[in-house]
Amino acid sequence: MDIDLLSKMVKELILDNDEVSLPGVGSFVTEIVPATFSDKGYTINPPYRRLYFRQRQNDNDTAIAELYAKSNNVELGQAVMIIENFLEEMREVLKQKKTIVFPGLGRLRATRENNFFFVADEDLDIYPDGFGLEPISLKTHEETPEEVTAAISDLKGLLEPEPAAEAAPEPAPEPEPQVEEPIAIEDLQIETEEPAPAPAAEPAQDLAVKEKSLKEKDSSPKALVWIIAILAILAFCLIVFAVLGRLAPDFVDSLLYNSEDLELVRSLR
Image 1: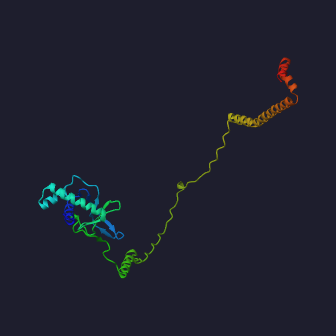
Image 2: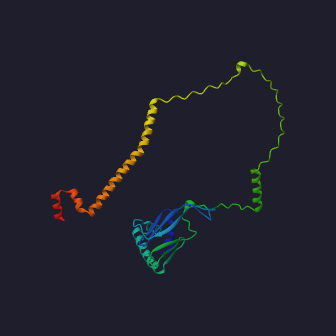
């Protein structure tokens, strides 16, 4: 068992399977990459099948051991032992050397933390359905300056139509003589001015309402003046009463209380 044989078996299996497991190491996995644009959108790249590696393995996948047993006429159990022993040694070499070349596939590498990843060869083709597909360039023809000038002149000819020939003016028709017909007297319409109707007299009830409203309007300012005057008098009385309460409290008390209440108030003071 060597790395060349292992690489050939992986490539043979990966053509018909989406995953090929290497016991104790990981799995080769494929995915379909759809068509893409490149060269600023002028080139269409066909779809292809990409190969990458992950350290998570499928323990139920024994395809690599079955292929080895079939190719070398050995039992499956013996093939499993041979594959596992070789992959264990390969794993240790990968941790030390950090790179193992799989001929015809690519390179399996390890990081400083011993995480494995795969770098496929640029010309690796594991997509049989894409046989014959090639990139398509949209830059099929590069026009010369003379061709561009000719195309622009053709466009101008299409956009600017030729002026139509001016038609000769038709002679104006001669006016027919107009014959005035006699007008009958009964056909004449004479407009007469009708006298304007006299304005209707307003009813007496409306006059009374208007007079009442006028009186109310005249009396409202007077009532407002009286109310203001009464309020002013009340305010003046309150001010006088407050001044007397400070200057002559005994006089104010004599106005508010009788003799017994006055003695009680004075005793409280």
